[in-house]
Length: 114
Length: 114
Image 1 (tube, rainbow over the protein chains, first blue to last red):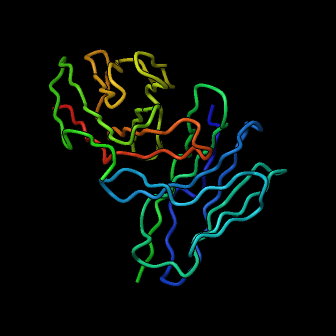
Image 2: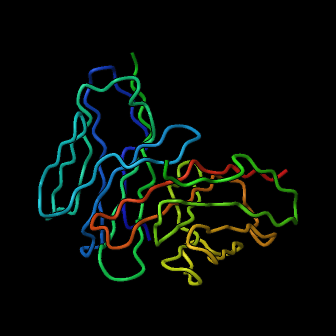
């Protein structure tokens, strides 16, 4: 059972474009939604995260939009640059309690052409 | 600098051989995790540990074993029972009770069966 569905699997944009990556979750108990960025041969790094009490969070050129009723959240990258080319993962978790763990989407390979 | 160190970066395993992947953290984090990454599959949880001398199976624990004798260390053994071990293995850690639940990842170990 895939609890976090991510799309698209891959995405190609031109420099300056606004790639959008979407995720949908099933477990309504999830209350923490991070995005990770991974470059080839490296471990993922936390990019930005949101909790369901807000509908949008912006950090630099990266914005998360969150729709609690639809159980969906998305990552937007403004003014994308070739250096943003990487694999992006969404994830979700239920904070508090024991046995805490993140559930990841399958990832989106983003290519930003010069 | 605090962080997670995974070693070796590349590892080659012969058929029928057990191998152990090292993960050490100096972040004083309570929880540690092992994920396996395959192309198009995202990150799948193998094992995780919330405290020393205790660990839980993740979604794909078969053919793997772990130990948590020290807070700083969480080695993963890939046994001969794991029939398709070729993958990128990622170790992560988390400070429990930190509020937001984002992992810190290591740089990974790429395991190849020869």
